[in-house]
Image (cartoon, rainbow over all chains, first blue to last red; front, side, top):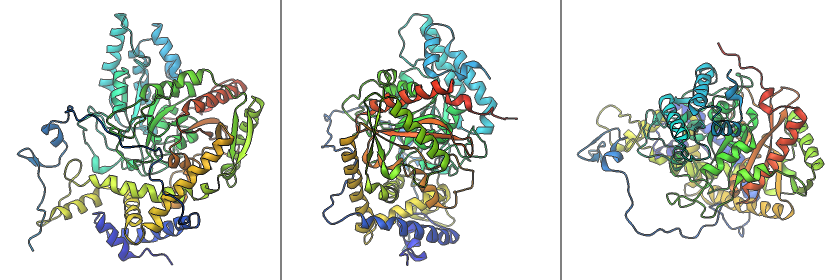
Length: 98
Length: 500
C-alpha cells in the first residue's frame, strides 16, 4: 500500500547524494513506508482553504545597511577544507569523461 | 564529592562575589568531577580543561583587582557540540565533522566568553541533534546519572547528563522538537526552549531552521534564568533574531507566583496513554498549582493530534536542505572512491560514510516530502497543519496565561528499547513538538519520581511568544512549593553515582 519502493529509495538517495548500501535500501524502504503511511494522515486535518505557515514568527524583510563588515579571511575560509590549493577549494572533476 | 559542585549556580555566583571561593576552585571542582564520572556518564565529546582554567584565573585576577565583572563571571558552563567554537572541535555528534575546528564562534559562545564563563567542554548529542536518546551519536551514547542503563534524553543528553551528574552547574542546549525539554524531564533537571528568535542561532549547526532554538539547561529555574538573560538578545548575524527585549528572566524567577494565574490543561496532552507514574505526579502538581491560587481551565487543541506527523515532514524537509552543505568540499570528511571519480561520486561516497542511520533516514524522508508529486500532499500539507496548531494555541491562550502538560509520556527508557523503531522514538516528543511548530517558549520542571521506577518526571509549561518570563514565574513558584514539601532539591533524590 505504501508508495515507498526500493527503487524510489535509491532514486531519493541519489538526489540527496548518498551512496546507500543495498542493505540500507531494504531497511529504509521498510522504515520509511511505516513513517510515510503514518504521517499521511495530515491530509485529513486540512482543506484547500487552510493557509500555509512556513515560519513561526511573522517577519517582514530584514535588511541592514550595506556597509562592509569584517569577514573570514581566505585562509580561515579554507582552513577546514579537506583539500585546497592556490587559495581555492580543490575538488575532483566536475564532469566525467563522456 | 566536593560540596562545591552540588551548589546551585546562583549560590556559586554569590560565593565568588563575596570572595568565599575563587573561580579556579569552582572550575577545578567541576573538572575533578568530570575526571571522576566522565567515563561512566560520557557527557562530553571534548574537555577544555586548560582554557577553562585560564578563564577562571583571569576572572580571579580581575576580581582581586576590584574590576566590575559580568554577572556570571567565573561560573563554569558546558556547551552542546552543535555550537561552533574556535578553540575546540565541533562535531555535532557526526563522523562527517570529526576534528573540525570552526573558523568562528557561535554568537552564544561569544556571549559566554564575554561573560567570562569558563567553558568546560562540548557535550554529546544525537548526530546533528536528530534523536531523543543520544543513541544516534557517532561517538556513543551518554548515560542517565539516575540509572546508567537508561537514556539521558536527546538530543541534548550530553548537556542534561553533565548538569544532573554535577559535572557542570549549567549547560547550553538546542531544542528543535524537545531536545532541551525532554532530556530535562528524564534527568530531573530544568530545560527551557525560549521564544523562537530570543537567542541567536548564528553558529548553531542548523537542523531545521524554522524550529531550532538555543536555550538553558540547569538544575533549577533561577539558574536557568541567569543563563537565558546572559545569552538572549538581538544579533544582526541572525536575520530571525528578535529585535525586542523579553525582559529579565531572573526577576521573573525571583518573583515566582501562581496566584490568579490561569493555567490551561491541554485536553489532548492531559496524560491519556502516558505512563501511570507520570500521570500521578502530574495530577499532584496540578493540585499544588490550584492550592497556590492558580485556576485550571481545560483547553482544546484538536490539531495537536497531527503535530508529530507535520513535524516529521517539516523537520526532514528542512534538514535535507540544511545538511546539503556537508558535501566534502568546504569542511569535514572526504571519501574518494577508487578510480577517477567525479565530484558527485565523491560527495555520495562521503555522505554514505559520514552520516549515521537516523540522519540518512531523515534526509531521504525530507527529499521525498519535497519532491514533485509528493510536495502538496506531504510538505505542503504539513505547513497547513502548522497554521492549525498556531490557531489552537491562539484560542488556548485567549483562555489561559500558560498551558500545562507532562513534558514526556514516559520516564527514561533503557538503551536499545526504541533505537530500531523510528516511530516509537518519535513519540517521545509528542508534548514538546507543538511549541516548536508555533515558535512559542516552553519549560520543563522536575516534579518528582514515578512510583514504578523511581525515575524523574517533568511538567511542561508553555506561554505565548515573547512571554518567556511567565514560564520562569510559574516554574519557580511550583519548584519552590515542591522543594518545601520535599525539604530538599530534586537532585538530592538522585542515587549515588556508582563509578569504578
